Length: 173
Image (tube, rainbow, N blue to C red; front, top):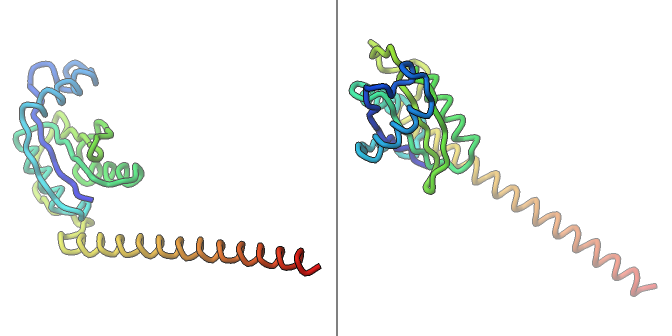
């Protein structure tokens, strides 16, 4: 469950969201620019933490659009990641797309973008805390799966016991 940032540059002539106001023009410029200009920023399985947001700010120095590729499996996790990236970075969420290897979150920095004075957000986790959180979430997920398997086994055993009791009643009478 890693997050990779793929950074592209939207060309300045008539492809900004504010100049033409055309969403299609912005998306077509994104597709063209990502084919030409691929830069990767890999952050691992930790999710959104202060290093990811700082990486966004660093890439927004010279580029206007960032494409975040996340390997999260469920769409609700992807939407949560997209909303938290939008809120923490101050960018505009353009789209969330399904890819063959995950999901792509496209963020636009805005027309009147200024770099923040302080990169570190107060309410984001550090890299170490984010790793501990992801390990804890993985443990919780595996425990839930194990509990679900045990419940299924118990219900199967109960149904088999009921069937055996019914067959014994039929044979015994």
